Length: 374
Image (cartoon, rainbow, N blue to C red):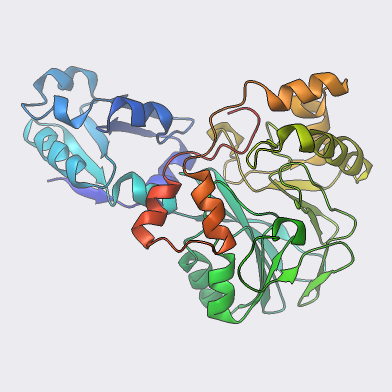
């Protein structure tokens, strides 16, 4: 009898590194975006090629434990039933399909704060998006929230935490921010860099140098980390003197792209200054916590993504480009495709359009593409 696996259960297996996946979406969708992991083996066979039977497929499958995946769930259920009838043991399907996989958030504790409290990373494994919750003395700030805010609400309720601040390091173009929505639900303050908010249609608090934010016993220092380049307003944060929340400026394996508002040539010098001067002047012991990751290999054994700043200056190729001309070429030429529906996502985050939940899910389908390399 076939069984469902939730996105949460699949995420656990991705982190642990053992699973065989039969993906029955179209080849182009599979090629663009799929479930990946260190020990994950996958095979793509479009559903329409299997309507008449799965016999030709059996020799390519393990005798047990196969997870069938499709876009929304329906096709995977039908194929899973066919595999079960053909004698494959332990056949599963992904509950909610890739849409559910795109939305799941895995909470991982990063560390403790000096005066009490903790910092957590919420890893949206299926999208490569990373958000953060900083808690201290019963209060919390959430940074770069995903659209699916229920994960933060549930976490706060379970841990008896009051959400006081919602912060976006920049105006996102690859995913819809849940910052404003959750701020309205919890009466929290919503912070956004003013240089990214010139077309915003709602009220917000300006995230800028000199405006420190205090959560319980912990101060989140904004100054002096105005770090433009990915966007003109991109702002980094140092939390508790230990953690550098880099937004989409710096990733573990790459650096941010400056072209999502059509300003690549204008912003490339800002990006270089932020990375090579402002970041280079900071303590190399700071733990970098980015807003995205590009490869599943960046996850540690807990499913978290982080690295010391000093290590990134040694190993990240985006931080080792010596000449200005070479840097300009690297961040303006041969870039990966832009995120799906990124213009509509930006308009949604500005408050200019109000898509339905289903429309928002469709807009976000696919990988993030905020780095200069995939």
